[in-house]
Image (cartoon, rainbow over all chains, first blue to last red):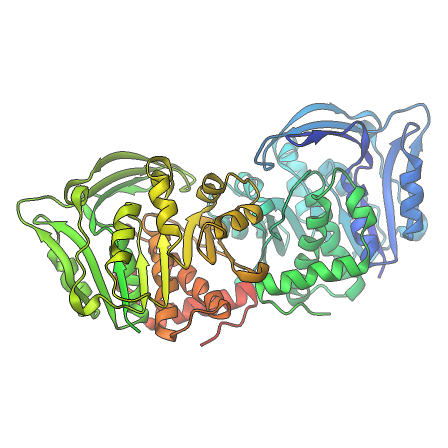
Length: 307
Length: 307
Protein backbone atom coordinates (compact mmCIF):
# COMPACT_ATOMS: atom_id res chain seq x y z
CA UNK A 1 0.00 0.00 0.00
CA UNK A 2 1.37 3.43 -0.89
CA UNK A 3 2.00 5.72 2.06
CA UNK A 4 2.50 9.45 1.59
CA UNK A 5 4.22 11.37 4.38
CA UNK A 6 4.17 15.14 4.61
CA UNK A 7 5.76 17.27 7.30
CA UNK A 8 8.84 19.22 8.26
CA UNK A 9 12.36 18.06 7.44
CA UNK A 10 14.54 20.40 9.39
CA UNK A 11 17.36 21.19 11.78
CA UNK A 12 17.01 21.03 15.54
CA UNK A 13 19.26 21.98 18.42
CA UNK A 14 18.37 20.31 21.69
CA UNK A 15 19.32 21.03 25.28
CA UNK A 16 18.49 18.49 27.95
CA UNK A 17 19.67 18.05 31.55
CA UNK A 18 21.98 15.34 30.16
CA UNK A 19 23.66 17.36 27.42
CA UNK A 20 23.18 19.49 24.33
CA UNK A 21 23.45 18.92 20.60
CA UNK A 22 24.61 21.29 17.90
CA UNK A 23 22.50 21.53 14.77
CA UNK A 24 21.20 18.05 13.99
CA UNK A 25 18.60 16.64 11.64
CA UNK A 26 15.08 16.86 12.98
CA UNK A 27 11.57 17.61 11.81
CA UNK A 28 8.35 15.62 12.09
CA UNK A 29 8.60 14.04 8.65
CA UNK A 30 12.21 12.93 9.22
CA UNK A 31 11.14 10.89 12.23
CA UNK A 32 7.97 9.66 10.54
CA UNK A 33 9.82 8.58 7.40
CA UNK A 34 12.46 6.70 9.40
CA UNK A 35 9.81 4.89 11.44
CA UNK A 36 7.54 4.00 8.52
CA UNK A 37 10.39 2.85 6.32
CA UNK A 38 11.44 0.15 8.78
CA UNK A 39 7.96 -1.36 8.43
CA UNK A 40 6.97 -0.59 4.88
CA UNK A 41 8.68 -0.22 1.54
CA UNK A 42 6.34 2.06 -0.42
CA UNK A 43 6.75 5.43 1.25
CA UNK A 44 6.86 8.84 -0.45
CA UNK A 45 7.89 12.10 1.19
CA UNK A 46 6.62 15.62 0.51
CA UNK A 47 8.62 18.30 2.31
CA UNK A 48 10.84 21.32 1.81
CA UNK A 49 14.43 22.09 2.86
CA UNK A 50 17.00 24.79 2.15
CA UNK A 51 20.31 24.43 0.39
CA UNK A 52 21.98 24.14 3.79
CA UNK A 53 20.36 20.79 4.59
CA UNK A 54 22.24 17.57 5.43
CA UNK A 55 21.79 15.62 2.20
CA UNK A 56 23.43 12.50 3.61
CA UNK A 57 20.29 12.16 5.66
CA UNK A 58 18.15 12.27 2.50
CA UNK A 59 20.43 9.63 0.96
CA UNK A 60 19.88 7.45 4.03
CA UNK A 61 16.12 7.77 3.53
CA UNK A 62 16.53 6.73 -0.12
CA UNK A 63 18.56 3.73 1.01
CA UNK A 64 15.52 2.77 3.10
CA UNK A 65 13.34 2.97 -0.04
CA UNK A 66 11.78 6.31 0.85
CA UNK A 67 10.93 8.10 -2.41
CA UNK A 68 12.04 11.72 -1.94
CA UNK A 69 11.06 13.10 -5.35
CA UNK A 70 8.51 15.21 -3.47
CA UNK A 71 11.26 16.89 -1.43
CA UNK A 72 11.73 20.49 -2.58
CA UNK A 73 15.21 21.99 -2.18
CA UNK A 74 15.09 25.79 -2.13
CA UNK A 75 18.23 27.36 -3.56
CA UNK A 76 19.76 30.12 -1.50
CA UNK A 77 17.36 29.46 1.35
CA UNK A 78 17.74 27.94 4.79
CA UNK A 79 16.00 24.94 6.32
CA UNK A 80 13.51 25.26 9.16
CA UNK A 81 15.34 25.45 12.52
CA UNK A 82 14.07 24.81 16.04
CA UNK A 83 16.07 25.10 19.26
CA UNK A 84 14.47 23.73 22.40
CA UNK A 85 15.35 23.03 26.00
CA UNK A 86 13.90 20.24 28.12
CA UNK A 87 13.35 20.34 31.86
CA UNK A 88 14.28 17.59 34.27
CA UNK A 89 10.98 15.73 33.88
CA UNK A 90 11.46 15.59 30.09
CA UNK A 91 7.72 16.20 29.70
CA UNK A 92 7.94 19.98 29.49
CA UNK A 93 10.14 22.08 27.24
CA UNK A 94 10.80 25.68 26.24
CA UNK A 95 11.30 26.84 22.69
CA UNK A 96 14.41 29.02 22.54
CA UNK A 97 14.54 29.70 18.79
CA UNK A 98 12.19 29.07 15.86
CA UNK A 99 13.32 30.08 12.36
CA UNK A 100 10.63 29.20 9.84
CA UNK A 101 12.87 29.86 6.78
CA UNK A 102 11.68 27.62 3.90
CA UNK A 103 8.59 26.53 5.86
CA UNK A 104 7.21 30.10 5.84
CA UNK A 105 5.72 29.71 2.36
CA UNK A 106 5.76 25.95 1.89
CA UNK A 107 3.59 24.90 -1.04
CA UNK A 108 3.12 21.11 -0.82
CA UNK A 109 3.61 20.01 -4.43
CA UNK A 110 2.73 16.35 -4.81
CA UNK A 111 4.58 14.36 -7.50
CA UNK A 112 2.14 12.90 -10.03
CA UNK A 113 2.89 9.29 -9.09
CA UNK A 114 2.03 10.15 -5.47
CA UNK A 115 -1.25 11.92 -6.15
CA UNK A 116 -3.35 8.89 -5.25
CA UNK A 117 -1.82 7.33 -2.11
CA UNK A 118 -3.74 4.76 -0.08
CA UNK A 119 -2.39 5.95 3.29
CA UNK A 120 -1.52 9.54 4.18
CA UNK A 121 0.40 10.79 7.22
CA UNK A 122 -0.01 14.53 7.73
CA UNK A 123 2.83 15.35 10.11
CA UNK A 124 2.68 18.40 12.36
CA UNK A 125 2.51 21.45 10.06
CA UNK A 126 0.21 24.41 9.45
CA UNK A 127 -3.35 23.03 9.12
CA UNK A 128 -3.68 24.98 5.88
CA UNK A 129 -0.77 23.10 4.32
CA UNK A 130 -2.26 19.84 5.60
CA UNK A 131 -5.60 20.75 3.99
CA UNK A 132 -3.97 21.79 0.70
CA UNK A 133 -2.22 18.42 0.59
CA UNK A 134 -5.51 16.54 0.93
CA UNK A 135 -7.20 18.76 -1.67
CA UNK A 136 -4.49 17.94 -4.19
CA UNK A 137 -5.02 14.19 -3.97
CA UNK A 138 -7.03 12.76 -6.86
CA UNK A 139 -8.94 10.22 -4.75
CA UNK A 140 -9.94 9.84 -1.13
CA UNK A 141 -7.23 7.77 0.61
CA UNK A 142 -8.05 4.64 2.57
CA UNK A 143 -6.71 6.27 5.75
CA UNK A 144 -5.56 9.77 6.65
CA UNK A 145 -3.74 10.31 9.96
CA UNK A 146 -3.11 13.86 11.18
CA UNK A 147 -0.73 14.97 13.90
CA UNK A 148 -0.87 18.52 15.24
CA UNK A 149 -0.05 20.54 18.35
CA UNK A 150 -1.29 23.29 20.67
CA UNK A 151 0.52 25.98 18.63
CA UNK A 152 -1.99 25.53 15.77
CA UNK A 153 -4.91 25.45 18.20
CA UNK A 154 -3.74 28.84 19.45
CA UNK A 155 -3.25 30.57 16.10
CA UNK A 156 -5.18 28.59 13.43
CA UNK A 157 -8.07 26.84 15.13
CA UNK A 158 -10.56 27.37 12.28
CA UNK A 159 -8.12 25.93 9.73
CA UNK A 160 -7.44 23.01 12.04
CA UNK A 161 -11.16 22.33 12.47
CA UNK A 162 -11.58 22.43 8.68
CA UNK A 163 -8.89 19.82 8.07
CA UNK A 164 -10.16 17.66 10.95
CA UNK A 165 -13.40 17.05 9.03
CA UNK A 166 -11.32 15.28 6.39
CA UNK A 167 -9.12 12.96 8.47
CA UNK A 168 -9.68 9.49 9.89
CA UNK A 169 -7.26 9.53 12.81
CA UNK A 170 -6.03 12.44 14.92
CA UNK A 171 -3.00 12.15 17.22
CA UNK A 172 -2.50 14.79 19.93
CA UNK A 173 -1.28 14.81 23.52
CA UNK A 174 -3.46 14.92 26.63
CA UNK A 175 -3.12 18.67 27.23
CA UNK A 176 -3.95 19.35 23.58
CA UNK A 177 -6.99 17.07 23.78
CA UNK A 178 -8.19 19.11 26.75
CA UNK A 179 -7.52 22.39 24.93
CA UNK A 180 -9.24 21.31 21.71
CA UNK A 181 -12.31 19.87 23.43
CA UNK A 182 -12.69 22.15 26.44
CA UNK A 183 -13.16 19.00 28.53
CA UNK A 184 -10.82 17.91 31.33
CA UNK A 185 -11.86 14.24 31.34
CA UNK A 186 -10.11 12.50 28.45
CA UNK A 187 -13.15 10.26 27.95
CA UNK A 188 -15.33 13.33 27.43
CA UNK A 189 -12.62 15.05 25.38
CA UNK A 190 -12.47 12.07 23.04
CA UNK A 191 -16.21 12.20 22.48
CA UNK A 192 -16.13 15.92 21.61
CA UNK A 193 -13.11 15.60 19.32
CA UNK A 194 -14.45 12.58 17.47
CA UNK A 195 -17.53 14.69 16.65
CA UNK A 196 -15.21 17.18 14.92
CA UNK A 197 -14.41 14.64 12.22
CA UNK A 198 -11.81 11.97 13.02
CA UNK A 199 -13.43 8.61 13.68
CA UNK A 200 -10.40 7.60 15.71
CA UNK A 201 -8.50 9.64 18.27
CA UNK A 202 -5.14 8.80 19.77
CA UNK A 203 -4.19 10.68 22.92
CA UNK A 204 -0.43 10.54 23.46
CA UNK A 205 0.69 10.79 27.08
CA UNK A 206 4.45 10.52 26.64
CA UNK A 207 5.99 8.31 29.32
CA UNK A 208 2.45 7.45 30.45
CA UNK A 209 1.51 5.71 27.21
CA UNK A 210 -1.28 6.34 24.71
CA UNK A 211 -5.05 5.93 24.57
CA UNK A 212 -6.89 4.87 21.41
CA UNK A 213 -10.56 5.85 21.10
CA UNK A 214 -12.70 4.46 18.27
CA UNK A 215 -16.31 3.83 17.25
CA UNK A 216 -18.85 2.33 19.64
CA UNK A 217 -16.91 3.51 22.70
CA UNK A 218 -14.03 1.18 21.91
CA UNK A 219 -11.01 2.17 23.98
CA UNK A 220 -7.54 0.64 24.09
CA UNK A 221 -4.51 1.60 26.13
CA UNK A 222 -0.88 1.10 25.23
CA UNK A 223 1.82 1.84 27.82
CA UNK A 224 5.17 3.41 27.10
CA UNK A 225 8.00 0.97 27.71
CA UNK A 226 9.65 1.79 31.05
CA UNK A 227 13.21 2.77 30.09
CA UNK A 228 16.51 2.96 31.94
CA UNK A 229 17.22 6.38 30.46
CA UNK A 230 15.39 8.94 28.40
CA UNK A 231 17.91 11.21 26.68
CA UNK A 232 15.79 13.21 24.28
CA UNK A 233 12.02 13.06 23.77
CA UNK A 234 12.21 15.12 20.54
CA UNK A 235 10.43 13.34 17.72
CA UNK A 236 8.90 10.66 19.94
CA UNK A 237 5.35 11.67 18.98
CA UNK A 238 6.25 11.77 15.27
CA UNK A 239 7.98 8.41 15.52
CA UNK A 240 4.95 7.00 17.31
CA UNK A 241 2.68 8.22 14.50
CA UNK A 242 5.09 6.83 11.90
CA UNK A 243 5.15 3.41 13.54
CA UNK A 244 1.35 3.49 13.79
CA UNK A 245 0.62 4.25 10.15
CA UNK A 246 3.61 2.23 8.92
CA UNK A 247 2.19 -0.90 10.50
CA UNK A 248 -1.30 -0.24 9.10
CA UNK A 249 0.02 0.44 5.59
CA UNK A 250 2.14 -2.72 5.64
CA UNK A 251 -0.83 -4.76 6.91
CA UNK A 252 -3.24 -3.03 4.51
CA UNK A 253 -5.71 -2.61 7.35
CA UNK A 254 -7.64 0.24 8.95
CA UNK A 255 -9.85 -1.59 11.50
CA UNK A 256 -9.77 -1.03 15.27
CA UNK A 257 -8.15 -4.41 16.00
CA UNK A 258 -5.28 -3.57 13.67
CA UNK A 259 -4.99 -0.12 15.24
CA UNK A 260 -4.42 -1.74 18.64
CA UNK A 261 -1.35 -3.48 17.32
CA UNK A 262 -0.41 -0.34 15.39
CA UNK A 263 -0.16 1.79 18.54
CA UNK A 264 2.03 -0.87 20.13
CA UNK A 265 4.31 -0.61 17.09
CA UNK A 266 4.23 3.16 17.46
CA UNK A 267 5.07 2.97 21.13
CA UNK A 268 7.88 0.46 20.52
CA UNK A 269 9.37 2.70 17.82
CA UNK A 270 9.14 5.74 20.08
CA UNK A 271 10.97 3.84 22.83
CA UNK A 272 14.05 3.71 20.60
CA UNK A 273 13.71 7.32 19.51
CA UNK A 274 14.13 8.75 23.01
CA UNK A 275 17.21 6.73 23.90
CA UNK A 276 19.63 8.92 21.95
CA UNK A 277 19.65 12.49 20.66
CA UNK A 278 17.76 13.20 17.45
CA UNK A 279 17.25 10.53 14.81
CA UNK A 280 20.46 8.59 15.59
CA UNK A 281 19.00 5.58 17.37
CA UNK A 282 15.91 5.33 15.20
CA UNK A 283 18.04 5.30 12.04
CA UNK A 284 20.18 2.45 13.38
CA UNK A 285 17.59 -0.09 14.50
CA UNK A 286 16.70 -3.25 12.63
CA UNK A 287 13.52 -5.29 12.33
CA UNK A 288 14.98 -7.71 14.85
CA UNK A 289 15.61 -4.90 17.37
CA UNK A 290 11.99 -3.91 16.94
CA UNK A 291 10.76 -7.47 17.36
CA UNK A 292 12.70 -7.84 20.60
CA UNK A 293 11.01 -4.72 21.91
CA UNK A 294 7.57 -5.92 20.78
CA UNK A 295 8.21 -9.01 22.93
CA UNK A 296 8.83 -6.71 25.89
CA UNK A 297 5.45 -5.09 25.25
CA UNK A 298 3.80 -8.50 25.23
CA UNK A 299 5.11 -9.29 28.69
CA UNK A 300 4.50 -5.74 29.94
CA UNK A 301 0.86 -5.77 28.81
CA UNK A 302 0.06 -9.44 28.51
CA UNK A 303 -1.39 -8.53 25.12
CA UNK A 304 -1.12 -10.75 22.07
CA UNK A 305 0.17 -8.61 19.22
CA UNK A 306 -1.26 -9.63 15.85
CA UNK A 307 1.18 -10.36 13.04
CA UNK B 1 -6.49 -17.44 53.80
CA UNK B 2 -6.54 -15.04 56.75
CA UNK B 3 -5.83 -11.41 55.85
CA UNK B 4 -4.90 -8.89 58.52
CA UNK B 5 -5.34 -5.19 57.70
CA UNK B 6 -3.79 -2.44 59.78
CA UNK B 7 -4.06 1.29 59.15
CA UNK B 8 -5.98 4.42 59.98
CA UNK B 9 -9.74 4.49 60.41
CA UNK B 10 -10.54 8.14 60.57
CA UNK B 11 -12.50 11.21 59.54
CA UNK B 12 -11.73 13.22 56.42
CA UNK B 13 -13.03 16.48 55.03
CA UNK B 14 -12.41 16.91 51.34
CA UNK B 15 -12.52 19.95 49.05
CA UNK B 16 -12.39 19.42 45.31
CA UNK B 17 -13.16 21.73 42.37
CA UNK B 18 -16.49 19.87 42.16
CA UNK B 19 -17.61 20.29 45.76
CA UNK B 20 -16.78 19.77 49.41
CA UNK B 21 -17.74 17.26 52.06
CA UNK B 22 -18.24 17.76 55.74
CA UNK B 23 -16.63 15.23 58.08
CA UNK B 24 -16.92 11.82 56.44
CA UNK B 25 -15.41 8.42 57.11
CA UNK B 26 -11.92 8.02 55.68
CA UNK B 27 -8.58 6.47 56.57
CA UNK B 28 -6.40 3.99 54.73
CA UNK B 29 -7.72 0.92 56.53
CA UNK B 30 -11.34 1.90 55.92
CA UNK B 31 -10.77 1.85 52.18
CA UNK B 32 -8.59 -1.26 52.34
CA UNK B 33 -11.11 -3.18 54.44
CA UNK B 34 -13.97 -2.27 52.10
CA UNK B 35 -11.99 -3.35 49.05
CA UNK B 36 -10.66 -6.60 50.49
CA UNK B 37 -14.00 -7.61 51.93
CA UNK B 38 -15.67 -7.63 48.52
CA UNK B 39 -13.15 -10.25 47.43
CA UNK B 40 -12.41 -12.20 50.55
CA UNK B 41 -14.29 -13.31 53.65
CA UNK B 42 -11.54 -13.79 56.23
CA UNK B 43 -10.38 -10.25 56.97
CA UNK B 44 -9.37 -8.84 60.35
CA UNK B 45 -8.83 -5.16 61.16
CA UNK B 46 -6.40 -3.61 63.63
CA UNK B 47 -6.93 0.12 64.07
CA UNK B 48 -7.86 2.82 66.60
CA UNK B 49 -10.69 5.37 66.70
CA UNK B 50 -12.07 7.83 69.23
CA UNK B 51 -15.46 7.82 70.88
CA UNK B 52 -16.64 10.31 68.24
CA UNK B 53 -16.37 7.81 65.38
CA UNK B 54 -19.21 6.77 63.07
CA UNK B 55 -19.99 3.30 64.39
CA UNK B 56 -22.52 2.61 61.63
CA UNK B 57 -19.50 2.37 59.38
CA UNK B 58 -17.96 -0.27 61.65
CA UNK B 59 -21.25 -2.16 61.58
CA UNK B 60 -21.18 -2.07 57.79
CA UNK B 61 -17.70 -3.61 57.87
CA UNK B 62 -18.97 -6.36 60.20
CA UNK B 63 -21.84 -6.99 57.77
CA UNK B 64 -19.16 -7.60 55.13
CA UNK B 65 -17.52 -10.19 57.42
CA UNK B 66 -14.68 -7.91 58.53
CA UNK B 67 -13.65 -8.94 62.05
CA UNK B 68 -13.19 -5.70 63.98
CA UNK B 69 -12.24 -7.16 67.36
CA UNK B 70 -8.82 -5.52 66.79
CA UNK B 71 -10.40 -2.07 66.57
CA UNK B 72 -9.58 -0.06 69.69
CA UNK B 73 -12.12 2.58 70.75
CA UNK B 74 -10.55 5.23 72.96
CA UNK B 75 -12.97 6.69 75.46
CA UNK B 76 -13.02 10.48 75.67
CA UNK B 77 -10.68 10.79 72.70
CA UNK B 78 -11.17 11.92 69.14
CA UNK B 79 -10.54 10.05 65.90
CA UNK B 80 -7.76 11.02 63.50
CA UNK B 81 -8.89 13.86 61.22
CA UNK B 82 -7.53 15.03 57.86
CA UNK B 83 -8.79 17.94 55.79
CA UNK B 84 -7.43 18.25 52.26
CA UNK B 85 -8.04 20.25 49.12
CA UNK B 86 -7.50 18.97 45.58
CA UNK B 87 -6.47 21.07 42.62
CA UNK B 88 -8.09 20.97 39.20
CA UNK B 89 -5.84 18.16 37.93
CA UNK B 90 -6.81 15.97 40.93
CA UNK B 91 -3.22 14.72 41.07
CA UNK B 92 -1.98 17.34 43.52
CA UNK B 93 -3.47 18.31 46.85
CA UNK B 94 -2.82 20.48 49.87
CA UNK B 95 -3.31 19.36 53.44
CA UNK B 96 -5.30 22.01 55.30
CA UNK B 97 -5.67 20.28 58.68
CA UNK B 98 -4.17 17.17 60.29
CA UNK B 99 -5.28 16.24 63.80
CA UNK B 100 -3.53 13.06 64.94
CA UNK B 101 -5.72 12.57 68.04
CA UNK B 102 -5.89 8.81 68.82
CA UNK B 103 -3.22 8.02 66.21
CA UNK B 104 -0.59 9.96 68.14
CA UNK B 105 0.15 7.05 70.46
CA UNK B 106 -1.41 4.14 68.60
CA UNK B 107 -0.25 0.81 69.99
CA UNK B 108 -1.26 -1.92 67.51
CA UNK B 109 -2.63 -4.65 69.75
CA UNK B 110 -3.30 -7.78 67.76
CA UNK B 111 -6.11 -10.07 68.93
CA UNK B 112 -4.81 -13.55 69.70
CA UNK B 113 -6.77 -15.23 66.92
CA UNK B 114 -5.17 -12.80 64.45
CA UNK B 115 -1.56 -13.25 65.60
CA UNK B 116 -0.71 -15.65 62.78
CA UNK B 117 -2.28 -14.26 59.59
CA UNK B 118 -1.25 -15.57 56.18
CA UNK B 119 -1.58 -12.21 54.42
CA UNK B 120 -0.84 -8.83 55.99
CA UNK B 121 -1.69 -5.39 54.60
CA UNK B 122 0.20 -2.63 56.39
CA UNK B 123 -1.73 0.46 55.35
CA UNK B 124 -0.13 3.90 55.41
CA UNK B 125 0.93 4.61 59.02
CA UNK B 126 4.07 5.43 60.96
CA UNK B 127 6.74 2.87 59.91
CA UNK B 128 7.34 2.17 63.59
CA UNK B 129 3.76 1.05 64.10
CA UNK B 130 4.03 -1.04 60.94
CA UNK B 131 7.19 -2.67 62.29
CA UNK B 132 5.67 -3.28 65.72
CA UNK B 133 2.75 -5.03 64.05
CA UNK B 134 5.07 -7.41 62.19
CA UNK B 135 7.12 -8.08 65.33
CA UNK B 136 3.97 -9.10 67.19
CA UNK B 137 3.03 -11.82 64.72
CA UNK B 138 3.92 -15.32 65.86
CA UNK B 139 4.96 -16.58 62.41
CA UNK B 140 6.23 -15.08 59.19
CA UNK B 141 3.19 -14.44 56.96
CA UNK B 142 2.97 -15.75 53.42
CA UNK B 143 2.83 -12.20 52.07
CA UNK B 144 3.27 -8.76 53.61
CA UNK B 145 2.27 -5.69 51.58
CA UNK B 146 3.23 -2.25 52.83
CA UNK B 147 1.87 1.10 51.67
CA UNK B 148 3.55 4.32 52.72
CA UNK B 149 4.00 7.93 51.58
CA UNK B 150 6.52 10.76 51.20
CA UNK B 151 5.64 12.13 54.67
CA UNK B 152 7.35 9.13 56.33
CA UNK B 153 10.33 9.40 53.97
CA UNK B 154 10.74 12.98 55.15
CA UNK B 155 10.50 12.37 58.90
CA UNK B 156 11.14 8.65 59.57
CA UNK B 157 13.34 7.33 56.77
CA UNK B 158 15.40 5.01 58.99
CA UNK B 159 12.29 3.42 60.48
CA UNK B 160 10.86 3.03 57.02
CA UNK B 161 14.03 1.36 55.77
CA UNK B 162 13.94 -0.99 58.75
CA UNK B 163 10.40 -2.16 58.04
CA UNK B 164 11.11 -2.45 54.31
CA UNK B 165 13.57 -5.28 55.03
CA UNK B 166 10.61 -7.29 56.33
CA UNK B 167 8.00 -6.82 53.61
CA UNK B 168 7.36 -8.61 50.33
CA UNK B 169 5.55 -5.91 48.38
CA UNK B 170 5.85 -2.13 48.62
CA UNK B 171 3.29 0.22 47.04
CA UNK B 172 4.22 3.89 46.55
CA UNK B 173 3.61 6.51 43.89
CA UNK B 174 6.07 7.62 41.20
CA UNK B 175 7.29 10.72 43.01
CA UNK B 176 7.80 8.71 46.19
CA UNK B 177 9.74 6.04 44.26
CA UNK B 178 12.01 8.79 42.97
CA UNK B 179 12.43 10.27 46.45
CA UNK B 180 13.14 6.93 48.12
CA UNK B 181 15.64 5.75 45.48
CA UNK B 182 17.25 9.01 44.40
CA UNK B 183 16.73 7.87 40.80
CA UNK B 184 14.56 9.67 38.26
CA UNK B 185 14.09 6.70 35.92
CA UNK B 186 11.44 4.42 37.40
CA UNK B 187 13.27 1.37 36.06
CA UNK B 188 16.38 2.38 38.00
CA UNK B 189 14.31 3.41 41.01
CA UNK B 190 12.68 -0.02 41.10
CA UNK B 191 16.08 -1.71 41.12
CA UNK B 192 17.31 0.41 44.03
CA UNK B 193 14.13 -0.02 46.06
CA UNK B 194 13.92 -3.76 45.54
CA UNK B 195 17.44 -3.97 47.02
CA UNK B 196 16.06 -2.36 50.18
CA UNK B 197 13.98 -5.45 50.89
CA UNK B 198 10.69 -5.84 49.05
CA UNK B 199 10.94 -8.42 46.30
CA UNK B 200 8.06 -6.75 44.51
CA UNK B 201 7.47 -3.04 43.96
CA UNK B 202 4.28 -1.44 42.73
CA UNK B 203 4.57 2.13 41.51
CA UNK B 204 1.17 3.82 41.50
CA UNK B 205 0.74 6.58 38.94
CA UNK B 206 -2.85 7.62 39.64
CA UNK B 207 -4.74 8.27 36.42
CA UNK B 208 -1.69 6.95 34.54
CA UNK B 209 -1.96 3.42 35.93
CA UNK B 210 0.50 1.30 37.89
CA UNK B 211 3.75 -0.54 37.26
CA UNK B 212 4.59 -3.90 38.85
CA UNK B 213 8.26 -4.82 39.18
CA UNK B 214 9.30 -8.31 40.29
CA UNK B 215 12.19 -10.76 40.24
CA UNK B 216 14.25 -11.36 37.09
CA UNK B 217 13.37 -7.96 35.65
CA UNK B 218 9.73 -8.94 35.29
CA UNK B 219 7.65 -5.85 34.65
CA UNK B 220 3.91 -5.49 34.14
CA UNK B 221 1.80 -2.43 33.51
CA UNK B 222 -1.83 -1.92 34.42
CA UNK B 223 -3.64 1.20 33.18
CA UNK B 224 -6.19 3.18 35.13
CA UNK B 225 -9.63 2.94 33.60
CA UNK B 226 -10.35 6.15 31.67
CA UNK B 227 -13.35 7.64 33.49
CA UNK B 228 -16.02 10.18 32.59
CA UNK B 229 -15.56 11.97 35.90
CA UNK B 230 -13.18 11.80 38.83
CA UNK B 231 -14.83 13.33 41.88
CA UNK B 232 -12.46 12.47 44.69
CA UNK B 233 -9.15 10.60 44.50
CA UNK B 234 -8.97 10.20 48.30
CA UNK B 235 -8.42 6.57 49.20
CA UNK B 236 -7.76 5.43 45.63
CA UNK B 237 -4.28 4.18 46.50
CA UNK B 238 -5.55 2.38 49.62
CA UNK B 239 -8.41 0.85 47.65
CA UNK B 240 -5.94 -0.25 45.00
CA UNK B 241 -3.78 -1.96 47.63
CA UNK B 242 -6.87 -3.56 49.18
CA UNK B 243 -8.02 -4.95 45.85
CA UNK B 244 -4.50 -6.21 45.19
CA UNK B 245 -4.03 -8.14 48.42
CA UNK B 246 -7.71 -9.12 48.58
CA UNK B 247 -7.41 -10.93 45.26
CA UNK B 248 -4.18 -12.66 46.29
CA UNK B 249 -5.60 -13.79 49.66
CA UNK B 250 -8.73 -15.14 48.01
CA UNK B 251 -6.65 -16.97 45.39
CA UNK B 252 -4.10 -18.12 47.99
CA UNK B 253 -1.31 -17.08 45.66
CA UNK B 254 1.80 -14.88 45.82
CA UNK B 255 3.43 -15.49 42.42
CA UNK B 256 4.08 -12.81 39.79
CA UNK B 257 1.40 -14.11 37.40
CA UNK B 258 -1.21 -13.80 40.13
CA UNK B 259 0.08 -10.33 41.02
CA UNK B 260 -0.60 -9.20 37.43
CA UNK B 261 -4.25 -10.03 37.86
CA UNK B 262 -4.17 -8.63 41.39
CA UNK B 263 -3.13 -5.15 40.20
CA UNK B 264 -5.95 -5.21 37.66
CA UNK B 265 -8.34 -5.97 40.53
CA UNK B 266 -6.75 -3.13 42.47
CA UNK B 267 -7.09 -0.73 39.58
CA UNK B 268 -10.71 -1.78 38.95
CA UNK B 269 -11.56 -1.24 42.63
CA UNK B 270 -9.86 2.17 42.62
CA UNK B 271 -11.89 3.20 39.56
CA UNK B 272 -15.05 2.95 41.67
CA UNK B 273 -13.50 4.70 44.65
CA UNK B 274 -12.85 7.96 42.78
CA UNK B 275 -16.33 8.27 41.29
CA UNK B 276 -17.94 9.58 44.47
CA UNK B 277 -16.76 11.32 47.63
CA UNK B 278 -15.21 9.15 50.32
CA UNK B 279 -16.12 5.50 50.75
CA UNK B 280 -19.70 5.86 49.41
CA UNK B 281 -19.29 4.26 46.01
CA UNK B 282 -16.87 1.59 47.16
CA UNK B 283 -19.26 0.50 49.91
CA UNK B 284 -22.12 0.13 47.44
CA UNK B 285 -20.59 -1.99 44.69
CA UNK B 286 -21.27 -5.68 44.16
CA UNK B 287 -19.20 -8.50 42.74
CA UNK B 288 -21.13 -8.13 39.50
CA UNK B 289 -20.25 -4.40 39.28
CA UNK B 290 -16.63 -5.38 39.73
CA UNK B 291 -16.84 -8.10 37.09
CA UNK B 292 -18.30 -5.66 34.57
CA UNK B 293 -15.37 -3.35 35.18
CA UNK B 294 -12.86 -6.21 34.88
CA UNK B 295 -14.35 -6.84 31.42
CA UNK B 296 -13.61 -3.22 30.54
CA UNK B 297 -9.99 -3.79 31.55
CA UNK B 298 -9.83 -6.81 29.29
CA UNK B 299 -10.85 -4.79 26.27
CA UNK B 300 -8.74 -1.80 27.32
CA UNK B 301 -5.59 -3.90 27.70
CA UNK B 302 -6.32 -6.96 25.62
CA UNK B 303 -5.13 -8.91 28.66
CA UNK B 304 -6.64 -12.18 29.80
CA UNK B 305 -7.39 -11.90 33.50
CA UNK B 306 -6.96 -15.19 35.34
CA UNK B 307 -9.85 -16.44 37.49
